[in-house]
Structures are given as structure tokens and as C-alpha cells.
Image (cartoon, rainbow, N blue to C red; front, side, top):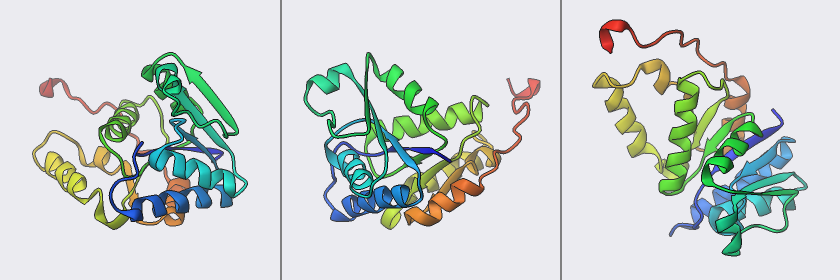
Length: 193
């Protein structure tokens, strides 16, 4: 595992626990010899995790659309900063450069990135681990909702099980290293179309 992509907020949130978690995640990545791939921002949890990786001697690769870089939110102190034309290019490059994905606390952008990369995994476009750092139950309501989606028959249990969850960075990274992608085969039967 050379690089992990971290999806997280461009704000810090109201509770300092999330910034603390971002610092811990950055230090854990660097300590494990794993590079960070992320959205390239200098602000919010994004900037915090990147700063933490860099402070611990790790590698941080940012990917940011030109429109956001022009707003002066691009982190200029990274190992690599890639300025791309669109959000689509950003997500594709982040996915290509990463060996797995972690969602930390964040808003709609974080959720959108998480669900898109999860969908790609469900469709077999990649076999990389996907995880949530669930600090103080931040993702508990979403996880309960997803369990309800399985119970309602709109999502298969093996797809739900693709998401690894922990409340601390090092155990989460260990789970990601041990991850074996499920053999999903053909999961839509003709009768279900």
C-alpha cells in the first residue's frame, strides 16, 4: 500500500475532535510509510491532514481543480500539487494514484466522493479497500441508514460489507491492508431488471 486517498471536509467542523483526528490520520499515514492523496486544499480538515503528513516526513499529493486553485485554497507546500480542469478529472486522478480510500468527517463533497468510489468498487472498476474513520460516531447514522437499505432489498449485504469502519487511524489502516475484495460476480439477475 503506497498511497491512500483521504476524503474529508474543506472546513474543520465545530468540534476540535475532527481536526485532532485529521492530525492523527496524517501522522499515522506518514508513520506507516503511506503517502496521502487528497483534494489539494490548504483549508479545513483537508489542510490539517496534509500538514500533519508533511510535518511527520510523509508524502502528500494534492489534486485540485483550477477554479478552486484560483480561489487561493490550493495547498502550495505539498510534495506534489496537480491542478486539473474539472472535478471529474480530480476524482479520476485521485482514484488512479491511490491504493485505497478513507472517508473522514466532511460534508456533501466528502459523501459524494465516498459514494462514487464505492459505486466504482461495486461495479468492479477497482478492488481497492474503502473505509470510514468514524470518530465519535460521526458516521453511525449513515451506517444505520445503509443497513436499512440492505434490509429493504436495494443493496446487497456483500456490497455493504465493502466499507471498513474504525474509530482510530492505525487499526483502520491495518484493516485496509488485510482487505480482500469480494468476488461479486454477476449481481443483477434477469428477473431483477
